[in-house]
Length: 210
Image 1 (tube, rainbow, N blue to C red):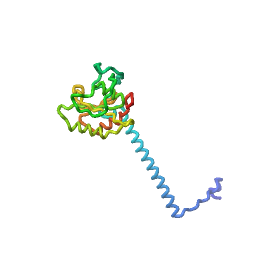
Image 2: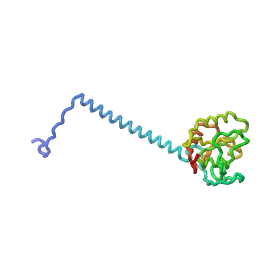
Image 3: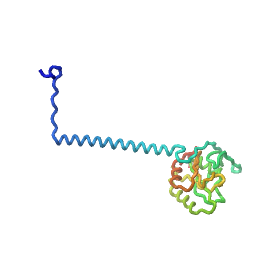
Image 4: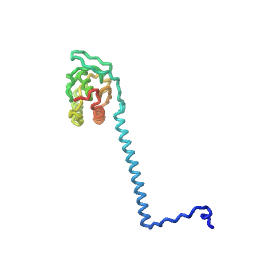
């Protein structure tokens, strides 16, 4: 009596033997499944990287040197009131009832008042402040190009203010980017960073209105 018979377990019948063509087909199918699984794994990794990137640029402080400032609230005052702020340049706080028209302003003798551009920040726009010790048409043209390239808001307008500003309040930076409660000092014009700033904070203020 054989070993299998003494164990009490019947012998298993052998399966059908695959032809060489069928063996190749099975091998190709296995390789295809392995390749598809690899692609799915790679796609998931890329998707995770994309999600991480967009979460990181939306996170306060994501840009080197960015400051997340205390929110000093809002509220309207008459244009005759002289405003003082706890932080300069201001990115929140009381402001005038009127906003400035969105756009690029280059007349150093008529800068947009703080009380107006803070209201623009409240409406979900961004402000770029700058100072030139002498005429700087090249820089002003760069600001104009930035305006042209910036995408519109959901209301169809571009929520950007560019205005000359008191250099004593810029903290030594030639250009300062503002959003509601946020500030970024720039050592020089940087269109890519400024467009990123605009896209991040478009509609960010307490009142997302046109």
